[in-house]
Length: 159
Image 1 (cartoon, rainbow, N blue to C red):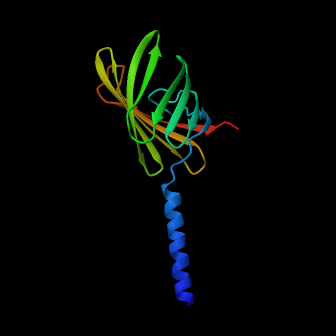
Image 2: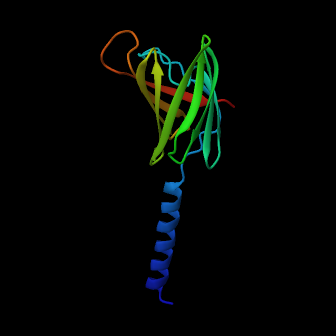
Image 3: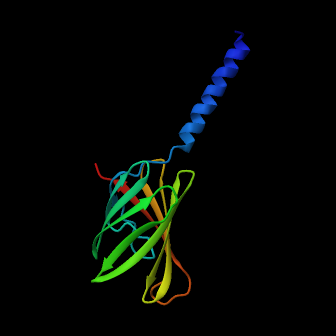
């Protein structure tokens, strides 16, 4: 085998390995706590003050701890509909979510009806180079404004 041919085979093996790594979605599993940001606007992040995330090949389970209590949502990672019920002050709100991967970012699009009004909430989750969980969420302005409210919240993994 010539050196050129060996180098070509090695290069192809490297590209194949890098492509496989690039397609592996990030693992969000762990306990995450919010990183305080005094400059943040728009209210708390969509995961609350802390969250425990469990992830396997087919589902992502998020248990959020918020000022209104603890909430658990299960999302199917294949893009099919996930149905969750959010109970706030005795009121059950049915949620339907779909997920979609865009590189290393998981997008969760959720629709629900609140006070007879359809509401759409989006959440994008990714892990930054330092290992922090970044959550960008967009929701309607429940304070009466016409523009949606977008928040970006950083979470660190508990040791």
